[in-house]
Image 1 (cartoon, rainbow, N blue to C red):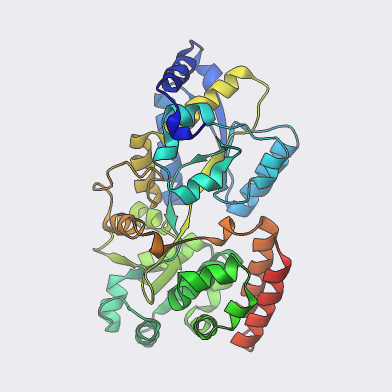
Image 2: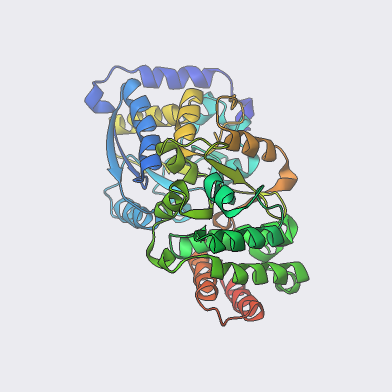
Amino acid sequence: MNFRQRSPVWAALVLCALATPVSADDLTAEVMHPWTSGGESAAAKVFADKFTAAGGVWVDRAIAGNDALLAAAMNRIIGGDPPSASHFNTGKPFEELIEAGLLRDVDTVARAEGWAAVIPKVFLDAVTRDDKIMAVPINLQTENWIWYSREVFEKSGVGEPPQNWDDFFAAADKIKAAGYIPMALGGGSWAERFVFQKVLVSVAGPELYLRVLKDRDGEALKDAKVQEAFAVLGKLRQYADSGAASRKWNDATNLVITNKAGFQIMGDWAKGEFAAAGLTPGKEYGCTLFPGQEVSIMSGDVFVMPKLKDAQRTQAQDLLAHVLFAPETQIAFNIKKGSNPIRQDVDVSSMDVCARHAAEVLKDPARQVPNPQFLMTNDGLGAVRDVITTYWNTPAMTPGEFSDALGKVLASVD
């Protein structure tokens, strides 16, 4: 049966289940997530507060960093000591747990509340297995924003944000000459991958982006626009400072917040850091999906629900799924997190100018592509990250040599 064909009876069944009288302690949910920076913590608190207001008890298990959280969550779930819920990135990272039969679906809640009608298809497909929704999607992120300091722009003689990469390099040269860091970078190979995919899609366009990363098309790697993208990526190296290698991503964002750097290429979660610092987009700082082609590289966060032996803890999972996906939770959480609601039926007029612009871009399927986590396994993505970081940190490596190395990796990964 199609999700949209479910009757309102499903809603009644879920509401009855959630209304079964239990004590507050019975509705305890231990939740693992990686949100520890200022903006991220504020966003996580929205979930905790909403769940508590609904009658649950939120037990917070924050572990800094996606990779560390992923390892800890996998160890606990596979080891037989699962939390009630754990954060994962949308895409293939939780595939292994589904195949092992360690995750429960959230289909009863999802069908009752009509989730399938309001989730973008690429995300719905990513969380659905055998016609059942296997995770709670909570946001829609755009990974390829450029954030910039308006004060650094003004003091460096830079006017409007760059529309093409020649403009970007001209602006970066002015910022550097004025004594600022042109491009704040931090987060290691994780962040370098964002720079790579930003440059690839903006220079070569969505079709070639997908031919390279999804189809693993060796001929696409030889295309002149792809080679141009790799040359742009190589040229960008000179605009990051020497401290980038050991810096966290949010510390790089702070360089833009404090007007020490001009640009940062980072996902929309960076906006949560600006908000936590009391800054307003369009006022003290700006956001742009240019230079080059204005395309959104989409990603998102989900919560998976491991199978539990305790019936009341399972009931708490249903309540948690209901709370995470509720319209008012979606707006409140994503304002703090910097992302957009995964629900396409909520009014985003109360959100900031960057979120509203992202919502407009995301209405056009021709201007959106999935991030690499939708397209390859964790191991595959790790191998691709390794070759990107090798290129980024080896100035003598040419675009052609990078192209050859990337082609070999893409041909060998799942």
